[in-house]
Length: 621
Image 1 (cartoon, rainbow, N blue to C red):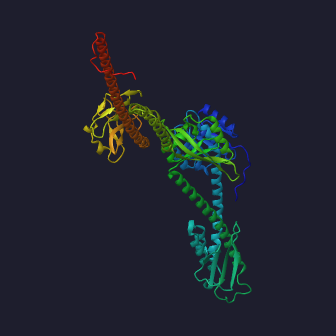
Image 2 (cartoon, helix red, strand yellow):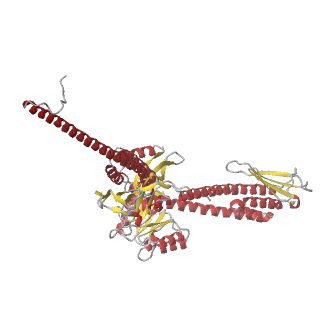
Image 3 (cartoon, helix red, strand yellow):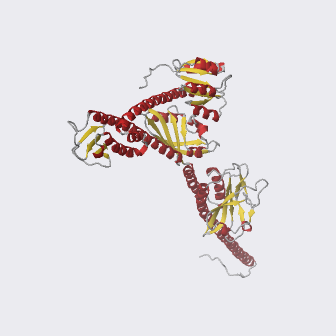
């Protein structure tokens, strides 16, 4: 018999709950959503009140006086087919849930102190009732099939076809071909002349023949009607013309049997094809689920209200949030607060219009650290074109964003370095610029000569992030490691104590990274960086870009030193010229004085009437 159609009416719930206030709250919550609820204060009263005609579904609490929920389910199971049952419990024990589902309950809900389970309760009840009705329909269909099998077996037994038809009806999966071949071998036995009989079953171009098949004119074709009008038929015949057949090749009883077999084949093939399509669909879903679970990209699926209902392991790896942390939550828990509400409003407007959105998020992990992800968010629609969910595929681009920011910092610092006149100015710009634009806590710069074993300090950073003058500090790095060997295979190395060769108390487990400065391939200085205050690891991106800056810095320092040497040479030349000019001026003044004295002596001798002693230097022309 076919299950009768149910009219669209409120779902009638019998609630077995011994806490009056919670029972009243659940009744109000469900009534507001179109359910009708009758309350029983314990399990025994619930069993007494339950009437299949009056209640569509039972909502049973586990912990009740007199009779617990699992005992109620067992008693109902003993009485006959179970109604739709959803178990609830404040204990939240997995063993209770497993036992309830084994006994035949459709679902299990854990009560939480904040009664958040009420939000999911209507959906859970509706889904449980739907599953129960489907189960009942399958049970009724199974009973109908069993009755049909019994009737068919009786007919086949009478005609010698039992074994083949049973094999047909019990066929599962890809073994349908074997079953149809078995039927093709069994059907001729139902005919009057089985020794010369044959049969052939054709389904969409595939043939299944009996062992003694031979195409002859003594046959009959019976159509096998399939619901999708696919081509299928069964032919039964004889290899030679039978004797004493009378007026017809096949009797009415034989024809009735063959049509009955064809009808049964039709029903079976339709069911098998439906089940096969379902299995294929389920397999595709399983493949899709495995692909999502194994994807290197983070995947998040939300409903139209923005509540998360799926995340894959890559999402947990990216964000630090486990699946149970985020299910039922809004993705806003990832927000860093940098994207404005108008941007989110535009995102939702695009998605709800059925279009795809692509963009970047600067989000916060569970541990509080920030990261960048590039997201592609797409709407999922049903057969009617209505948006039902949204799926977001996220790629962690933190390293790319960091590299982009570091490249910009290298370019800006390179420009600032190029504009500096002196070595001291360059050193200060580099130390402060690396600290401020490359996201490190501390930076120090040590300079020397490729031919000298020690490096002198220039500027550094104290524990409060301030720039300090380190010109008094001398670091004989070659007492710890040979510089040539240290940087033989790379421009930077991690593992030296922070700042100075001797760690301070409490700093023994901390390390810094040294980046080499080179002149003609030889190391003449190092940049030291660390994150002592924030305790973050210095990334490969940071070290690689500071190494790029070190190349610019090395050239700039060499230019500054050459400029200083040239300035010193010019200054020395100017000083020598000035001394020579002063000497010349002194000598000229001395000669002029001598001339003046000679003239004075000649003037005195002229006054005494004596001839001049010195020859006149200046003569009037």
